Image 1: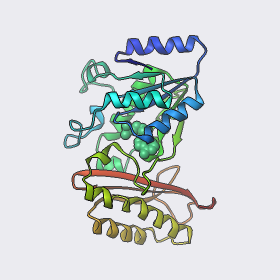
Image 2: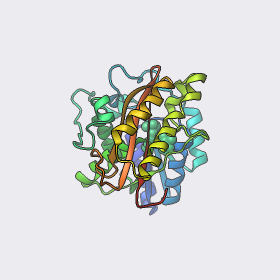
Image 3: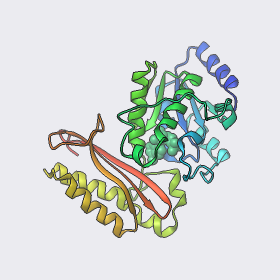
Length: 286
Ligand code: AMP
């Protein structure tokens, strides 16, 4: 696997793969890779001949009081995992390479609708930062397909919408969330948890499953289910950020007639903010 830091080297390596007739798959990340990221790269290697990954902790998507500075940077370990998962080219630009003219005057991409509410409400500017950097990366790599995790369900909806609205000829593939044995969704931010916090963290996914089971059994009082789950989160030491039942395709608040649903949550434990979600189809047995 080749690691390059400049757009010029990236374009040259991708151009060579293209000249060899290869299909290009792309997996953007912020590094500190775990089995969830590896699953995306493995999928990319199954679907295309040449796999490009990027590691870039994008300042544009972090709020002023968020964890940009302490976000874990583990390049050597990440490179090993990428090689093992089948990656051919790693792009690790620095901030100057991505934003050579500074971030203030940078053209921004905003995706109305699906960006609003949920993480969009708790993290103002976050999805504009994501949509902008992903658009730039797509233009740099020009992949045939790109793979994202369903773990970031709203982000995936934002990317699908931006690719559709900006006519980008890129197939977007969403991959299921990889979890620890106790159900906790793998996340780089799990590394911030102390032992006691890590022990209680699986309550988040457990309550998502309980809510889905109740809805499958016919419960449609979503507000009641949310209140019960948030009580369990609070009892475990979490401060709820949001917990909502939405229609899975549009992300609008769910009605009692919707069949494709997603329950999404964000919650703080200490200063660590975790997100998770569970999508399900009432017409498909669970
Ligand atoms: P990040 O490095 O957190 O920006 O994530 C990079 C990509 O990995 C995104 O598409 C995420 O949705 C995906 N991802 C993160 N955690 C997981 C997970 N536990 N399972 C599957 N994909 C994940």
